[in-house]
Length: 371
Ligand code: PEP
Ligand code: MN
Image (cartoon, rainbow, N blue to C red; front, side, top):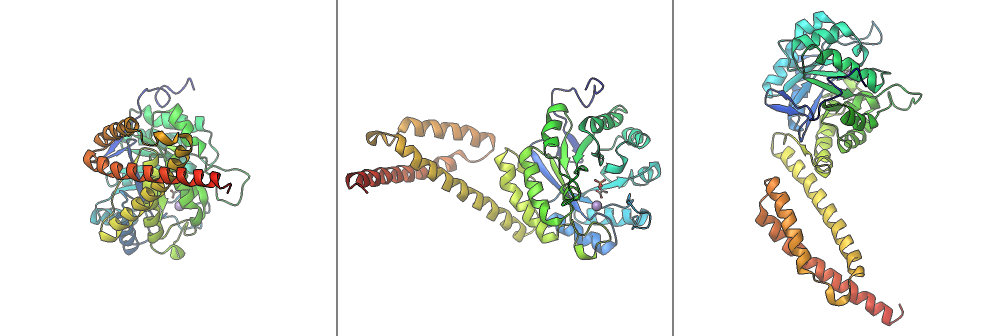
């Protein structure tokens, strides 16, 4: 990768500020919306659903690079008005795709992030202009691009002294036909090793079917993706493009709630609480389920530990102190009340000891009677 002085070599990871939102830090951010902007009401419903799910950015294509010239090409300037009005109403950031210099010029002062699609990944003139714009740019991986080609394309934007480049894995073309593209999960890990740039994923264009989108999204977050760009339509069956791969508003909300625990398991935070009591409660429900699953797993390990201990050394106060001190430090870092952690763990330790004693007694009893 000798030719990649900017994307390739920089010790610290780049964080990109879009208004007061940061990409590439601890927070995982959800961007969602329809493939294409179709009407004002559609975008208002979409924006409300994105907000409800805790999303931060509203997507919607107004210039659509379609495979067939007879397919819906997007609403252009009119679509841009619908996108920005809906985002404003729901206090969301905006992203839309540009396909040529004219569309870049058109959207530049109206959206927060511009997207260069897979089909234009090597449109070098467009990359240079996007670089000169200074705007945050989502650069999607080309349909059959290697990671090296993708990073070289990013370099065109960086070389214009625009550091705000976000790489987006959206699936690549392989021999597999059961999905629209093949989601390259390993690209996330490779990009994180080879580049300092944030890496996000678009599971929708990778999967091509809405039922696969949640699994790919969870895998992506677990693998280190910084953001998610998901297609969601208020009425997918009526969508003018990509309805089959678009989540419904309810599915998006469920996915966002499910991602809370996945993000936490890799030390990240799923940003956005969603608005409204229902959305907040669904987030709490998901966190609570995660807590109970982990507690059950802990109790299972506690029983295994009992089998390694001699009967007279079941309670180990030094070990309990060590755990409390270690968790106290983590709690302080995460701004979680340390006394809450101490109280919860006092109960957990008591239960663990009771379980271990019972398990020991039961096993000794079974041995004595040969059962
Ligand atoms: C899109 O995001 O609507 C799109 C066309 O994506 P891609 O460039 O990844 O095909
Ligand atoms: Mn699409």
